[in-house]
Image 1 (spheres, chains in turn brown, red):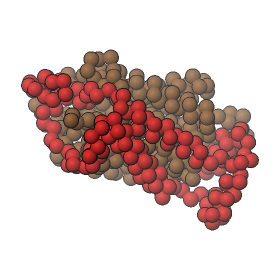
Image 2 (image 1 turned 90 degrees about the horizontal axis):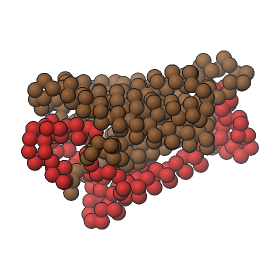
Image 3 (image 1 turned 120 degrees about the vertical axis):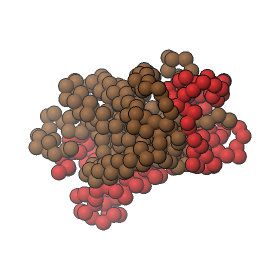
Image 4 (image 1 turned 90 degrees about the vertical axis):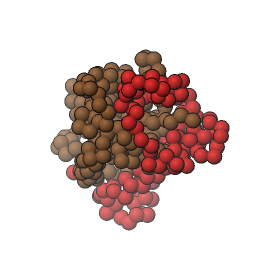
Length: 238
Length: 147
C-alpha cells in the first residue's frame, strides 16, 4: 500500500536545522498561547476545537490541481485566522499537525517544528495580515468576505510553500546542484494552484459560517456594529 | 446576550465527520504539491514509487511511528480500503476535536461570566439566556464585553 504523506518527511531536512525550527516553533506557539488566551473565552474554545477538527478532515481531501499527477490539500491557516483569530488559529493548525505526526504517521516527528513553522505559523500570520487589511478596505458584504478569504488563502499557501524553500536552503539533504531557485519555482507554481483550491474552500466555509452564525466569525468582530454606540470598545478588541 | 456555540459546534463536527469518514475516499491519490516538487528529477511508477533518476525525495527516511495503528490514514487490521480510510478519518476528527477543544477549554480565559457565579450557575444562566437572546444582539454584544 502506498504511503500518503502530505507534510515534510523525515530525512528531507537535516537534524540540526529541524531542531532549530522545533525550538523556534515552540517559542512562537508559546507566544500564541499567551496572546491567544485573551481571545479564548467560553465561546471561542469549543469553536477552536471545531476548527482544528474541521481542518483535519479537509486536509484529508486531496484535490487534483490542473498539473497532471499532482494534488493539493487545504493547509488551513487562512480559515483558522478568519474563524478564531491569528493566535488561536495558529494553535489550531499546530494541533492538527501534531495529531497527524504522532498518530497518523504523516510528517516526521523530527520534522514537526518545520511543518508547524510553515503551515501553522507562517501560513496563519500571512493570511491574517492580509485579512486585517482587506476587511478594512473591502465592502462588508458576503462578497467582500469571500474575496478576503480567497486572496488571503492564496497568499497563505504561497508563503508556507516558500517557508519550506528557506528551510531547504538551510538544511536540505539532497544536493540540488545550486538549483534551489528551480525548486522554489516548482513549489510556487504548484502551490499557486493549491492556493486557489484552498481559497475556494475557505471562502465557501467562512461565508457559510457568517451566514449561519456571524457572531462566531472572529474576523467580523468589531466590524459589524458600525452603528453601535460602543465605539471605544472596538479598539480594544484585538 | 451571547448565544451558545454548542449547537453550531455539533453541526460542524457532523460535517467534518462526513468529510473525513466518507468523502475522503474520493480524494486524489496523487502526490501533493510538496511531494511532487521533491520528486522532480526522479521517475516514478503508477504507485508513485521512485524507479530512477535523482531527486530530493530519495533522502526521505521512515517515519518514527510508521507502525502506529492509524498510520497513513488507515486502520491497521481492516482490509476494506473504504472502511479503513473512513474509520481513520472519523477517529482523527474526534481525536483532533478532543485534543483541541480540551486544550483550548483548559487555556480559556475565565472572564466576567465565570467570576460572576460558579461553574454550574453560570451554565444555567447562560443557557437560559441563549433561548431568549435576539439574533441581532450577539455582534454588538461581543466587542462590548471585551476589555
